[in-house]
Amino acid sequence: MRRLTALEPAEAPGKSRELLEDIVGRSGGVGEMVATMAHSPALLQGYLELSRAMKRVKLPRALSEKVSLAVQEWIGCAYCLDAHAEAARAAGLSETDIALARQGTSTDAREAALIAMAVRILAEPSAIGDEDVAQLRAHGWSDRIIAELPGLVALNQLTGTFNLLAGLEPATQDA
Image 1 (cartoon, helix red, strand yellow):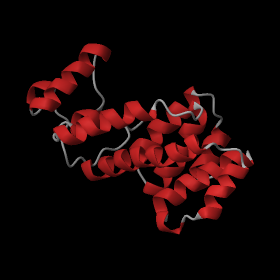
Image 2: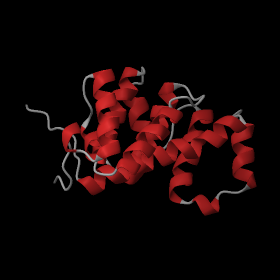
Image 3: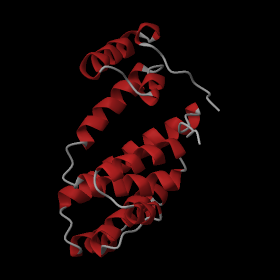
Image 4: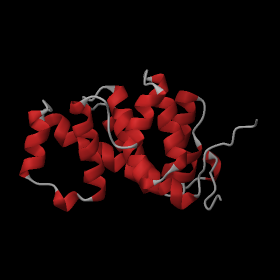
């Protein structure tokens, strides 16, 4: 059930109006989540800046989507799960890849280690220690990727929890 309404640019507070108008000018429209975030100019600006920054991570797009699927499954945001499953398919992932990612794993041991760490960053960050980072390095992950992982998790936590709070749900498919 929708708890917060999406705003049209003209309805949005000052800075949010500017941000929405810029997005509409560049891409023709904004999604439900962004239009709903517009209630808070600070949140909308922070989300847009973090989102742009996380598009520059060194993870391949398909692996980034696997991480997002694992995190969103843990959070329980159906809206985000639908969006990330669609993006995962567009990135070439199979339905099996998507299902495994939602379970927090992968058929590739190296990827599985990174995906599992993403879930731990979300679920139990205080339990992460030296051995955990050493294990990621043993799988060949660079310090850059290790450092970027909490940012990707944070972006997913922000969107998932916002959508749950706002009551955003995936569009229903007519049969």
